[in-house]
Amino acid sequence: MKLLRLIPNNTNFDFLRIKVIAFFFSFIILLGTLISLIVNNLNYGIDFKGGILLELRSKNFISPDINDLREKINTLNAGEVSIQNFGKDTDFLVRIQKQEGDQKEQIAMIEKVKSLTDKNYTVRRSEFVGPVVGDELKTAGIYAVSLALISIMIYIWFRFEWQFSIAAILALIHDVITTVGLFSIFQLEFNLATIAAILTTAGYSINDTVVIFDRVRENLRRYKSKTHYFIYNKSINETLSRTVITSVTTLLALFIIFFFGGAVLSDFALAMIWGVIIGTFSSIFVAVSLLTYFNINKGEKVDDRTNIPEYEKETKN
Image 1 (cartoon, rainbow, N blue to C red):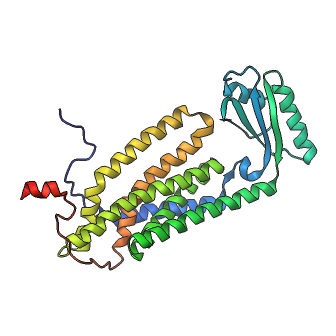
Image 2: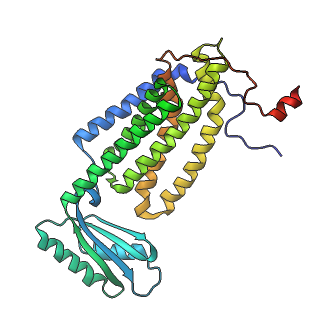
Image 3: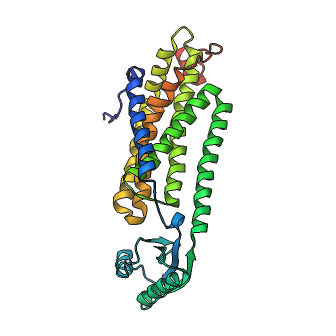
């Protein structure tokens, strides 16, 4: 039976030939992100803007329809409302944007929700998230992303050489900024789930980059008589099948979450979908292309058969 292959064996694409086009494409996206952030900023969710938080539990101890609950609360014209399951299927977390006015207005809205849901739900917890807490969460999110980028840069620096570290972190910053830009341009809700998606995207992207860089380092020592241009292209081609298959299988799962995961997970899934696509692009076209601007030492030559298992060497001998 003939196996289905997304990418044929022994590809020989000249990826570096279009690096200028790739850089221009990235520049346009980054420029669009910058303009959008200046003009539109981000559409911050309740996590960052502050608002009302309620924890509900179904009195019937059965899994109620989350859409029915959302429709009921929407009749209050409370503005932005976010509802999601947590813990058991009968438990819901309801977030409502901060109401105009002082604390009395917030308490009044909490009482309205309690009155509306009293027949089918028990309100186990209710609280008001003030703008100060929202600002603290926003700061914590920035620290989380920054710390992740710095940690990754240090890891790449120790695992490879400083040139690889700079190329990897620039590609990673490119992925993070463009993902933020997606939410700014289309004014999607930017909340803590988005931060989680960005951090997950960073981990996915750097994994792809490390796989390619590992092959680059190996080939630099193996093909000392070849040019860096040849080695970089060869390394990308040798890992291309793995990169594409990993991305496609991940995207299949994310598209299922996007279409069937409900409103709560749709923005998270969208951020991940974009992150996987742009992360794959940056690993192939940005990270390796950046290496061409460094004079990387090829190191000591290694035997072409170094990574061949012993039993294969014996067979070939």
